[in-house]
Amino acid sequence: MKLTVNGKIESFEKESLTIEELLKLKKVKMPEMVTVELNGTILEREKFKTTYVKDNDSIEFIYYMGGGSPII
Image (cartoon, rainbow, N blue to C red; front, side):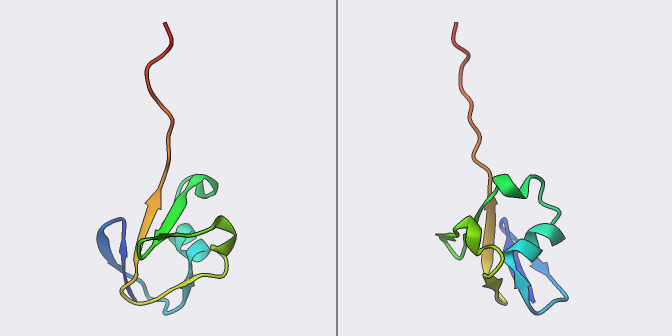
């Protein structure tokens, strides 16, 4: 199966993968903090275990981080 993950085309031997399995295969750090976009749609975290990716799907792993200037 071929997927585009974070803009890069990758091949996977498995023909059936859930989002949760893909996070583990990709060794995503802090998977509890990542937002997943599948083909342009943000997935709800509780659907990671039951949502399967298909050949040619596009997946983005997104981390939201706070930041800014310190208060002086």
